[in-house]
Image (cartoon, rainbow, N blue to C red; front, side, top):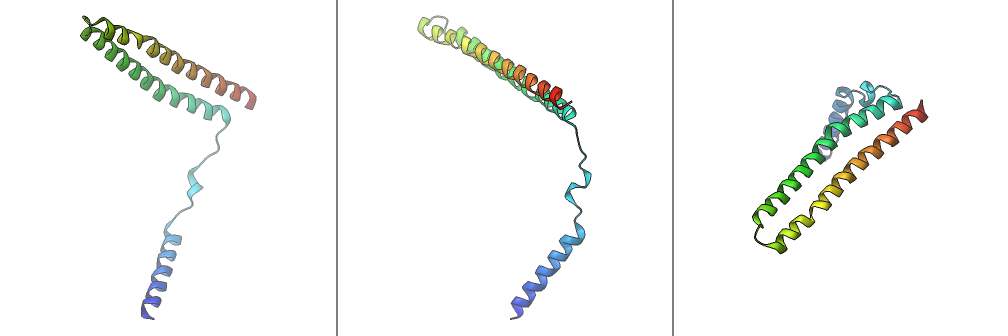
Length: 114
């Protein structure tokens, strides 16, 4: 019986403390129009996706170059290493195309909203 009363008092104390000490969650959020939001999305994409994509392409080309150098006397392995170059270039073109497409879609959304 004493444990139940203690549990209920503790629950009431915690509920009261939470209600008194917290502030509304949406207090600092402001409204943003579509053009500002699309500019932020494009900015984040430019700041994050491009450097990561460039780094991955650089690493892949570096590994391929290392394989080409180390397999100079082995024609079969060298041909395999050279066969990966078109895939690396295709991936780079795909990444660039995705960035172009995303910019096109966001620009179209901005024009339609404005």
